[in-house]
Length: 112
Length: 117
Image 1 (tube, rainbow over the protein chains, first blue to last red):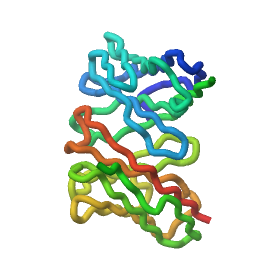
Image 2: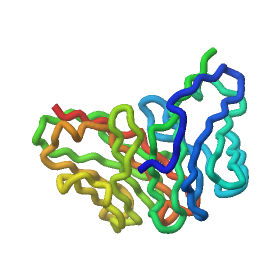
Image 3: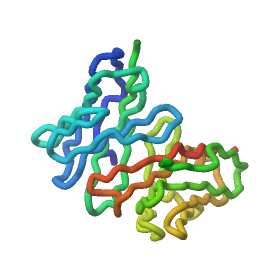
Image 4: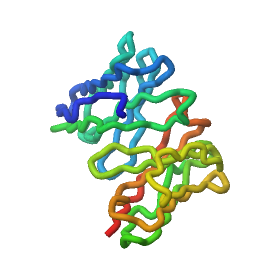
């Protein structure tokens, strides 16, 4: 069973910030939150991950609520190349071999 | 350096044929994963290798599916007596660390699209 809930789709205007929500109310204390994206006909691409603290890298920012039951991925300045399916995944750190349990993801369409 | 590569990129098989899908992980990566992605769905875990040891094959859908990584680098996913429901994209991923856990990043290949007629 999927451990996360995401909206099936969302649109974003080019140049604007895209805020992608994810609910993971059953997350365990040692589980990370990962975000991957998949552009059409390509393999998934790692974006960012976090445990408790907010994280930022060159691609995005990850905001995790204090109770860790939800998070938001922020693409600060969306471009047309950011059109993809975005997957929010929670996974155990030590006892699950690191396998990623993908859900259906959010289809993000960035429009000019 | 090169990323994860997979071959062939596309494979068409007649029902009942055997197929072999190859994955070349990033050099030095300990962990290797196979996933199956049906049309319109997210990838689903098939199996996991740590070096040459297959430590988890819980996701393999039937005994027609077999994976190996004999020298701890290149891996092959073999499907015997293919069925139409095997049609999917097969993705390979590798990561540097053992288990692929503790926040390690998995790097995915482009996948092999298998169509069974």
